[in-house]
Length: 102
Image 1 (cartoon, helix red, strand yellow):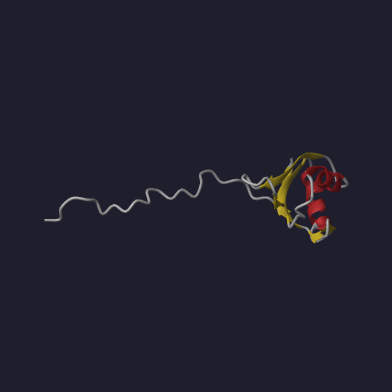
Image 2 (image 1 turned 45 degrees about the horizontal axis):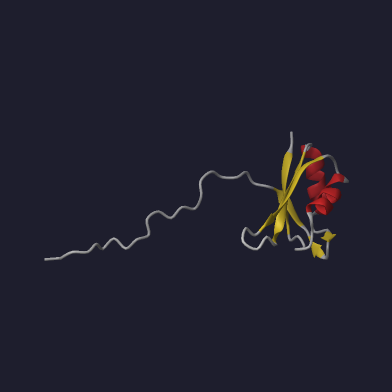
């Protein structure tokens, strides 16, 4: 069973190859994704690592949490599953209407 790991407090200079190399010391890595800002393309300082073996992933979380990586102390935990839907706000228009009140 695989595990998806949240990796926070990443250096803005970190790249996916370096992050993969760090986690490969603990087992097979399926995917690595550093999240970037959709407008600037700059790293948002966090990402996700998916590992094939849950036990290896949990060991990586335990041993790498707070470890210095690129000058910053990593913050790791098992990623929560995505929730469906979004924040959605509905209709935000002022529905006072026009026309006469009389």
